[in-house]
Length: 98
Image 1 (tube, one colour):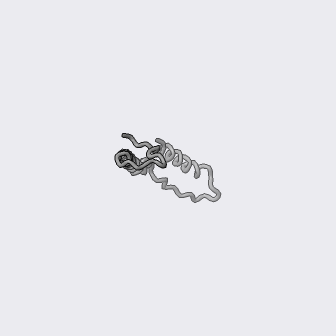
Image 2 (cartoon, one colour):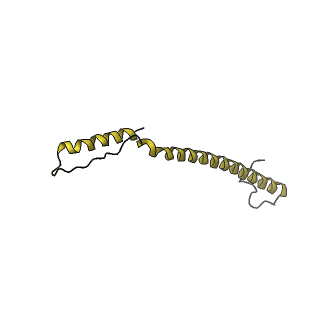
Image 3 (spheres, one colour):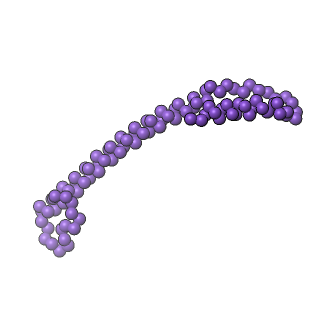
C-alpha cells in the first residue's frame, strides 16, 4: 500500500495494520529517496573529477608562447618599441582561445 497522507482520519480509532502500513510506505519512500541521492552524489563526483581534469590542463594552453624578452630604453617610447608587445599579446590571446 502506498503512503496515504489522509489516513488515519482525525477522530478514527487507531488501526495497527493501517498505521504499520503507513509507516512501511513512508520507509519505502525514504529508502527510494536515499537511493536517488546516492546516485546523484555519484554523478556529482564524476562531474567534479572531469572538471578537475579540465582545470588542471588549462594552464598549459599558453605553454607555446615564449617570453617577450624585451627591454625598452627609448624615452619617450617609440611605436616600434610597442609593436612587439602588441604582437606578443595577440599571440597569447590566440593560444588561450579554445
